[in-house]
Length: 277
Length: 243
Image 1 (cartoon, helix red, strand yellow):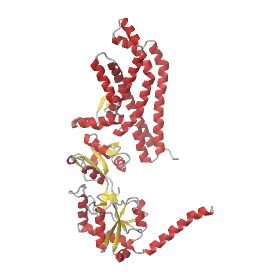
Image 2: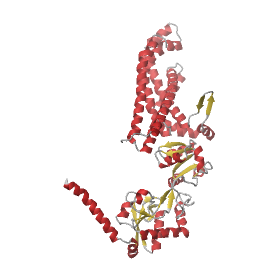
Image 3: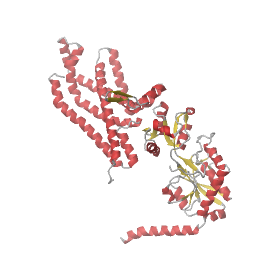
Image 4: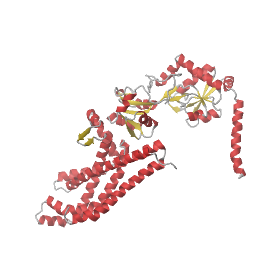
């Protein structure tokens, strides 16, 4: 019995101690980064165009990496990219293996308990593909048949916001798109970046368009260790500066611009007021 | 686990059950009529008709129902002119006094068509098996009495064939109800589709699929009861020659 209690208490105590120790040791991460001359950043290595390995030189590149490089430049240090995935990016940040996370990191209240987030630098949301000219404004959704993937938040959002829309749920996005092509539905819904990727592979893509509105908004920001306010401020200042001098738009266009493989209109600028989903 | 489903979601499942029943009854009725015709066509003396009928059975019995449903919904739809698709996909209502008929969604239509075509092949074969179960000598005896082929079918062969075919036919109707769950792949909002919707919205997986299972079991049980009732009453009427 006693052992059991100790078995629970001891790790808890240790974690507590470690937490105290780590926050004491890194009282100010910004100074540490400048002293080391290296900004360590976690980014995806297999999630194009956010972060992926360039087959030419095996370096990780992408939208997130470009933003990370800009932050490193403004701090006057070198950038070191650590590959990560959705499962371990928070652990990397909390254990101090990296200083910042740039990994298409959607800001949620749950995650805010674990890490701090910068001002958002990317937004995505529930969007639609329709035949050209059929869907101009969200209100039209009430009169349309909309195809969705079963069980996605997209489907639930359309149902909640446009109760008169007829929603037909399919097993996955290619099925929904087949229904759009045959005319069984007039629009299909998914997250913007996924629709873009889907449309890029369609042979007759000139017949379809992604109307430039979202009906929900997910914001992605830079993950910053909890309590590192100076580092957070530095990141935020850099992001705002990037928007002000147009570099943010350039970075976006490089990956999502009209000439990119997956064009997606830029509906959100850094510093824009955030719409509640 | 402790909490029960909200009435709203229970209503969703009930709606799903209604669609499942409508679809099954609609497809079952049409498949029975067509299956009957198919069985007679397969035994037709005209070789071309018999061959066409066996070709139908060959095509529809030898491919999976899911593929057939996808074919009707996605494949056949792609061949139709766009104007037709627009018409099929817009609701049309015909008011006829107090009765208003509404053209069903294309999902429901394609599901009904697919199920009917598929089930026709099976029901037709059950009918044919019933007809073969009647001794050939009876046909010859009927002919000796001067009955034509169709008179013999009507008064001698079919009443007996129907009795032989009744239990396997009930089995086909049970299969039809269960097969109707496959139409969820083409977006028909029947019971299985609705149970999945309820599951993804409430995360009450056990309740959602549990209730759907109970609904299916009860529906099939009702067919079993109908079979027993029919065998006790309707069959006697048949035997007395009142069919």
